[in-house]
Length: 117
Image (cartoon, rainbow, N blue to C red; front, top):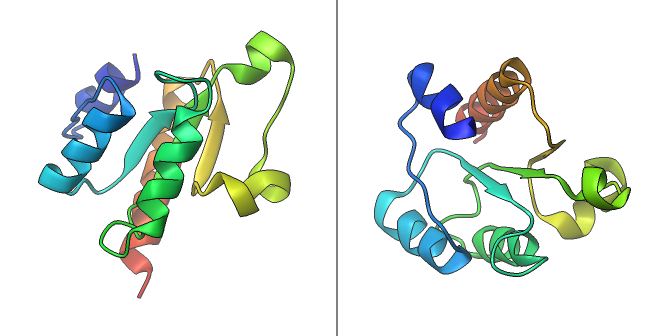
């Protein structure tokens, strides 16, 4: 759904099915932003992937939006205010995400990254 929403609003969307494939895509395509799920091949693969991106000097400025259904499935909630020091993402959304919210967050993230020195 997220892919369709973004593509229908003019974004070029590149997808990856795993963290490993995601890293390959980042290296070859150098995206303007990354949207990822917390739970990929492992329950915390999204955290590991985002940490790997943010620790790499070539990629650390790529904004990352993490989207997850963990809160819906477990009742456990994350927040950038409380968990941002270890999450290593630029924004965070709980699923389900309304299309207008996704677009607003992506737009805001891209605008902020373009304005950064």
